[in-house]
Amino acid sequence: MKINKIIKNIYYGFILFVMFYEIEGMATETIPSNLLAGWNVIRQSQLRQDVSYLASDQLQGRMTLDAGDELAIQWIMKQFKIAGLKPANGNSFLQPISLIEYIPDSQHSYIVLNAKDKKISWRKPDVFTEFRRNIDVTSEVIFAGYGITAPDLRYDDYQHIDVHGKIVLIFEHEPQERNAASIFNGTANTIFATNRIKALNAQNHGAIAVLIAPEPNRKHPSNQERYKLIGGSTARKIPLPSIVLKEDELHIPIAILSDSVAKRIAGNEISLSQLQAEIDSDLKPRSILIPNVKITIHDKIKSQKQGISNNVVGLLEGSDPTLKNETIIISAHHDHDGKSGKEIWHGADDNASGTAGVVTLSRAMMVNSQSPAGLKPKRSILFVVFAAEERGLLGAFYMSAHPLRPLNTTRAMINFDMIGRNEESTPQTNGLINIPADTTNRLNLIGSHYSPDYQLVVMNKNKYVGLTLDNRFDSENALNVFFRSDQFPFVLQNIPAFWWFTGFHPDYHQTTDTVDKINFVKMQKILRLAFLSAYEFANERTKPAFIKNPGLK
Image 1 (cartoon, rainbow, N blue to C red):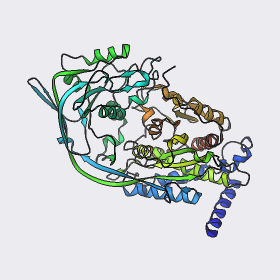
Image 2: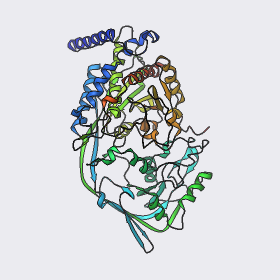
Image 3: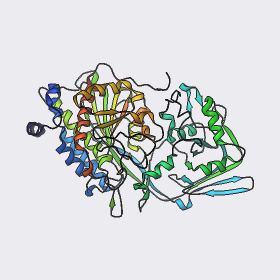
Image 4: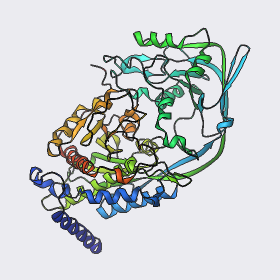
């Protein structure tokens, strides 16, 4: 115990020494004196060092289940220990997650249409179908609108149909997405727009498989069309493996259809375009059995293996005897897209920047808590760096299902994913969202509709930092940004959770996402704003409210 105390004293003494000689950013006299010790820990030189290591060739792109990502996990755990955090999972800083990695056999995975005297089969790129094991299912097909059941909104596409043992055909997205007055959060996304939520809903209604079609009347690319515009990881020589949770609650296959395939399955007797228009007009279900049609979904895999990755989790216990049982989460994800041949997807912005951010705040908050003049957080702070975000938010979904602290006592979540760059136009975003001319000082906050209280806290603390705060991603529905990072599984649990995000850029998911392009000046300001906001969440009397259905006025 004495040795550990000596080591900690040396560590904190070193931090204070560095603070004395290196104070970057805004004038410190504007910062409350009881937060100054931690504020000054957040330094550009240390951020550069941390991001440089995580995005280095040595870590080989941090692919989930590969050696490079394991190095990242061990590094994060070491930094949490040095900072003085407590293990959050018993005596461990690790929360193990059992995963299944598999290689789809795209040549032998397809769907088949049997309609009257016609038999047609489709493979990629007309359909995208893969499952974690070999399957072969055949059934009639029921069109089930958008595949949504939302009792609070009095909307249910399954209201008058029985889909037990059937395959359902549903639209992407959600109704009335161009109507600012829609109960589905106006022009923004709600939780019901995600394919995973739709598939789980179909499964809960007894369906055996899901066909997902682009909305025929859409004014934006389909999800598959948008994904192709990203490039980078989609064009690699050795395709990315697919990974799922071993204990995934979703047990049925999903097939993503092109417009032409969806139209052929619906046949001449059913107009998907007309059905969408009718649903959007009055929000009443138009679900119907597609006559004289059977579909077979045939998925085959080349190989499969099981492995374990880890969420890395450390705890700063709160100082208040009662409030310490409540939790503030500060999170990011440590994985990226690995390598293909000699090419490495370095992931400096995505998400070495966020990982370094969580580690930096763990140091800053511990130093501030240990400082004689420092403010101690009343609520506990849980620092989490999730596994397998790039493979489908797997670490975050796992923790939301297996929380290390009760979710009903979690008051706010700050999630960092890509906090190191200036937003720029890309093929993925062109024509879909307006990008300001100057983004060098701009931070996007995603989640404002679900907790205006949270947003107000951040806006108030921004007077010490001076960033340009932007929530325009909260009012768009084409890019699906709302559910593309690790805060989303916690929004599903009614937790005020925001994604802190500096925006897309041409190096997104490219081998060129490297450390030399990081804007460390802005990154430092973002983390200082998060530091101040986290303290406010930890110490304020009232918690930020969560609005379950922001479209209901």
